[in-house]
Length: 120
Image (cartoon, one colour):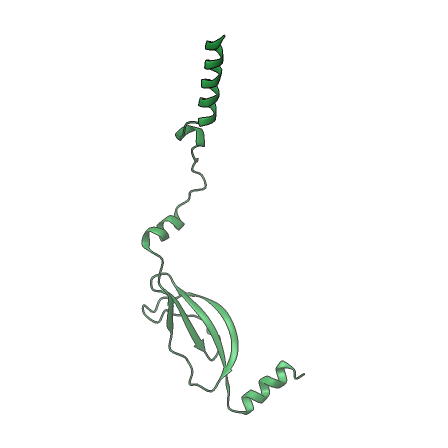
């Protein structure tokens, strides 16, 4: 079995070039898939040119011209969802179930007990 280093050198000798597959996450425009020849210091959104976070997916080889055109793979989150993510809901107290919904079992037990007392 051939080592990855040997295979890499063989592909480079055959005219292939290294490609780095990335997902670029723009908060305004969504997630783009990019193919770049190397890592960069800063990754900019192809639409608004704002700095973005990236996730490295894979490293491979290609004979196609680099960089690959960015492809939109996921649209941005709706504004209401972004606002919900940004809210601090940890400190909020959630209502207990008994505060907003009557307990059917307690009501039924009281009715049975009242009927038993009435029968005596």
